[in-house]
Image (cartoon, rainbow, N blue to C red; front, side, top):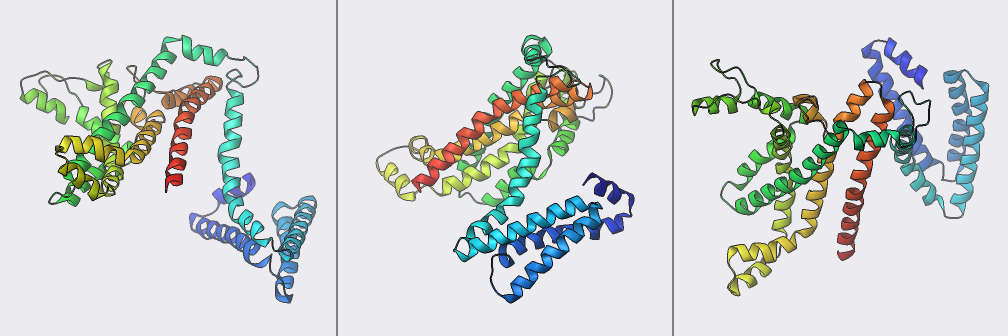
Length: 377
């Protein structure tokens, strides 16, 4: 596989495109073959299966130049088709169709997630070169050194502030703009930052925070406003410890639109009869909101809070683009990258494990809540 990609990088880009498309079509064709043709009976399908049993080993032999792999491919394909045919005759062909559909996703999860996660976890217990077992030394370093503690504390601050503020702002906006004149235009304005990448949003806000020496023309919007009001320019991104909060503002700006869209749809799903009954009971708007609307959208609130919390735990682009972790603004994801660039692979892996441990409870809780909602439905 590596040789194939190396060869692919040496040819013209105009040839790379049809080759990649051809490989993609071949994979799709293989899946369709296993799903539609392999389990069926009849002379035509038998001939097709026979051709596949001959063509596949020949293709493997041509690509890998190895008789051993060609024999393995022929034996594997032959046994697979035989087993498919036998199971299909007993009415179990649908099981293999299901496996054929799921196998690409399972393979990608295995190669891209499970195996790297196991390797990273193991690497966290070795030294910087991955050659000497050091036990919990990397984790002890994280939680005893001021730098490591600061990184973990900053990450916790992101997780505590960002989901709460984004959800409250999105909920307030969704509720008060609901059914207002020009509702869709107001909501589009809030949702627009979601269309911007984190790097793009970071660049925009970095210009907002840009500072120049006093007496010079300010190109940063916030500092220009401060100068107009008679104040002195402030270096927002170097002002500790408030600079972390100034970075959090960027993520809140982006995620508020997401919270607003989800919660707006949930609010529209609250039964009108409940609101009317509460109004007839003499409740005011705030009481109807707290006692009727909020319980009615509890599931959506949980999803929004946990989703934004997970995004806050994994935040990297904003910190890397705006400060690169300087001035005590680094977070776990950024520190992983920094340690990797410093050739401290053990510490980088340890930070990755810590991040995984922090994210896992949120993922599990979100999955449990979604399962409960499905059971209610």
